[in-house]
Amino acid sequence: MPSNRWSLSVPEAHRDRKLRARNVSHARHNVPVWSNGFSMPDGARILGQHGDEVRMQVSMPTDEHGFFGRECPSCSQLFRVDADDYEALPDDIQLWCVYCGHHGEHSDFITRQQLDRATRAVEDWAMQSIGRRLDQSLRRLSTPPPRSGFGIQISYRSTPFYPQPLPGIDEETLIRIRSCGSCALRYAIFGEHRYCPVCGPLPADVIATDAINAETARLDALGHLPPHTAATLREQGVFTRIWVDTLKNLVGIVETLAGTVFRTTVPDAPQQLKGNVFQRLDDTADLFVEAGHIDLRTLVDAATWQRLRQAWATRHVFTHNDGVVDEKYLAAVPASTTPRGQRLVITEQLSRQAIADTQQLCSAIARLTGRPTAATSVP
Ligand SMILES: [Zn+2]
Ligand SMILES: [Zn+2]
Image (cartoon, rainbow, N blue to C red; front, side, top):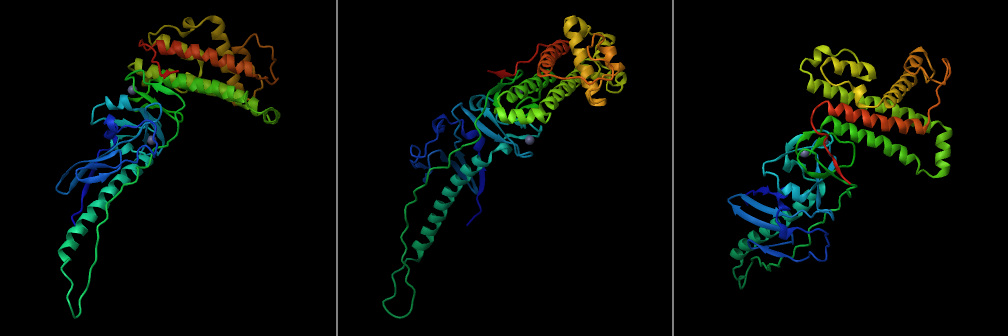
C-alpha cells in the first residue's frame, strides 16, 4: 500500500460557508456526505487525490460569536480570531502569537481540538481506503473452494462504512472582542498580550492603556470579595500591598511608554539615555523638552502633575525606605502632612487617583509621537 501524503488545508476549511456551523450539535450533523467516492462525516470532504497526495478539507466550527481558536506552537497558549476577518487575509499570511510573539505559518497555529477533528476525518478516509484495498485483494482470492482434499475456505463480506460525526470544538469562551487599531482584525485573548495576530508588536500606548486598565480591574476585583475573605486579607496587609503595587506598576507603565516613545522619535536616543531616567517624572519631561518635544507639564494641568509627583515619590519611599518619609519625599511633596521619619499611609482612593492621573500622563506622552492614539477594543 503506498504511503499517502496528507495535505490538510484545515485553516482554510472555515472559508467554505456551506460547511460552517456556528453551534455544533452532534445530532444535527450526523449526516454522512459522499465525497470523491468516500462516505465522509458532515464537515469533511475530499478535494482530490493526485498520486500519493490526498487533499481534504475539514470545516472548523466557529463559536457563537463567529470566532475560532488559534494555538501558539511555541508557548501553547490559545487565542481566538474572527473567522470573517481571517477569511479576508491573504492565503500565505504568517501569524503572530499574541502572547510570546512567535511568528510563523498560520497552519502551525492549529489548536488541539481542531487537530483532533481533522485527524478523525483522515481516519475515516483511511478506514475506507484500507477497506477498499482489502475488498480488491480478497475478491481475487475468492475462487470456489475445492470439492475435496485439503484447502482453505475464505468467507468475506465487505460492510458499508458509516462515519460518526466529527468531534465538535469547545474551546475557551471569549470574554470580550478586541479590534486592532492598525489592521482592524477582531480577536480575543486570555491573558496579557503584546502582539496583534496579523500586525505583530502592539503600539506602546496600547500596551500602556491595557496595563492601566488591568490595575483598575484588580482594585475592582477586591471590592467583590466575600466580606470575611476581604477582612482577613485586609488584616494581613494584602490590600495595602496591592495599593502600593499599583503605584509601582504605574511607574513601570510610564517608564516603558516614555522610553519607547523617546527611542522611536529621537534619532540619537541611545546616546542621550543614561540610567533609569524615565522613572523620574521631571527628568522625563526635561528630556523630551531637550529633544524638541512639547513639555509634558503643559499637557496635563498643574494639580494633576503635582499629584503625579506625589504618587511617584510615594512609590519611591515604599520601594527604598519601607514607606518612611525622607528628605527626598518632602522635596517632591512640600505640602506633605506626613513629617520626615513617619510612615506614609496609603489608601485605595490614592491608588485610584494615581491610576486616573497616569492615564492622562500616558495620553500626553502618546501625543508626542504625533500619530493618533490607537483604539484597541470594541466594548
Ligand atoms: Zn506563543
Ligand atoms: Zn493588527
